[in-house]
Length: 144
Image (cartoon, helix red, strand yellow):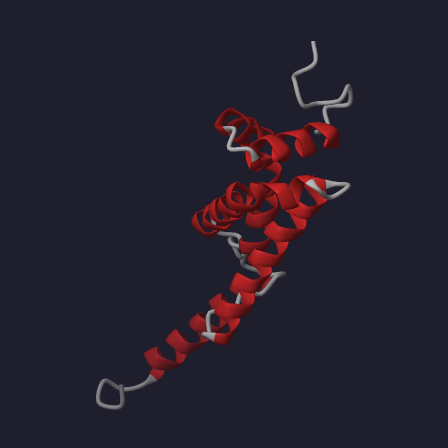
């Protein structure tokens, strides 16, 4: 059985999103909840992918949904409201990344959260440490 707001392929139906945006523009809170339920996982994922920080991604999502509540008619009036929502999330996320770069907290888009140490580099450091300890061992107590 198909969920409301989904096509047979599991993708969100653009007509449903447009209709929900128009209903939200009329102050329909239930439509707002359904719109959030249909679109927030994808939008949050986009923000998280760009920001790599769950709290910041959640802040972007809150800001976008506040904009939707305040200007839902604009979102519902476009041919593809989901594209507009995705573009807004992307734009706000990139603005935040740029602002952090200006403040000196730049994010490297190719940096991973968990840097994997290169085994060869670790082995080289181990050899260097052994050589240093050998040299220190050859020094007299006075010279150490």
